[in-house]
Each structure stands twice: as C-alpha cells, then as structure tokens.
Image (cartoon, rainbow, N blue to C red; front, side, top):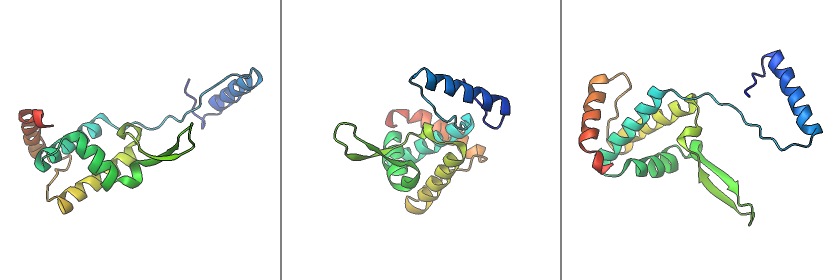
Length: 146
C-alpha cells in the first residue's frame, strides 16, 4: 500500500501498521515512491542516445553505460555497495530507471552539452520536431548498428 505522509489519515494508518509489524516481529520492506519520469522524456533520451551512437560509431548501450554514466554524469549515476561476503566496497552505476524527472533532465542537459562540445554532435532540443523526425527515420534505417 502507498501512504501519503503529508495526509494525516495515511500517516496514522502507517504508524498503526508499523506498530503491528513490530509487535508481531514481521519482516517488512519500506521504500520511497519516487516521481516517475515522463514517457516523452524517456523516449527523447533514448532517441538522442541512439542518434549520438550512430554519429559516434558505437552502440546505444555503449554510449549510455560508458559515456553517459561513467564519464558525463558520473556524479549522478555512480554509487557504491558493500559485498556481503567480503565486506569489500565496490563501485556500481544506477540504472536510468532509478532517476526522477529532475535528475533525468539534468542528465539530458549534461549529455547534450558534452555531445556538442566534446564530440561535435548536435543533439536536437525536444521541441525541434523536424530534426527529431529525421533522426527517427535514420535510426530506423540503421537500427542494426545500434
């Protein structure tokens, strides 16, 4: 069940539920429900990643994982975890699905800036529909390279 903690009724229900679980010594999972990014934002991101990949000569997965996550937006994606058996702290990278709308917007802007300044590849703004439609056609024609 999802509880809105700014709603007093939900807040009280949650407190009672947690109290019950504590009394019964139950195992529970608590997680934050994050704002989801929009479908259009997600589509736009994968469109510009694919276009960059075609122009750069790499796969879309390579661009997303090696360039965006590990170079351009490392501060957003890099995380650490502890290996439960060895206690070793390891580096890991978040999935784009873990980002909220605000973080995803930052990633897109950082990637667009990197693309034009470092790679010389122009990535269209979301409102540039003529260029976006042209890119969609090119991606469809060259999908086997992505």
